[in-house]
Length: 205
Image (cartoon, rainbow, N blue to C red; front, side, top):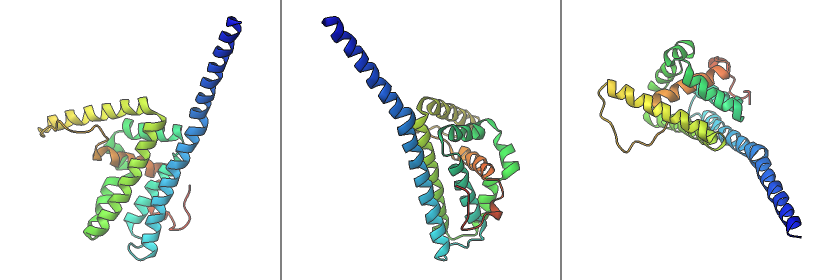
């Protein structure tokens, strides 16, 4: 009787673990993917509403750049695509990405002519998109993502040391702003790279 109870316990535990694995690998990952897309769609809708209200012209380069970046994140919203986008921004030289798609230069040029309030609003939406994307990677690809963050933090610390910048002992490991521009260029490439041809209404999901 004890042997039967032991077998039942093992089978029950095994099925429970299998159920949890299925829940995480499929249902929960699908939920996180949908949550990321919902957050990105909400940011894109806020951008569209602001332009529709006259806050920013639909034809303004800053509108096209931010919308193109969001579309790139949306296209890479699934787990493999999101991590591939992160690795693309990590592996490809930032100068090469800038030469090909030039997000940083175009973004700075486009936002310099705007008022401080409008520039702050656009930067906030860009930051919210990054946070949603990084949170998605942390939850769905935690160990690999943390390894990337560790490497980026180490590389940034070496770069700052070479430039004799003061170190901050309380710095929380996170992608530096320079990497975010590389990520935005990679996202823009994923969206097709032609931000100025995106219509204000129709855009790929």
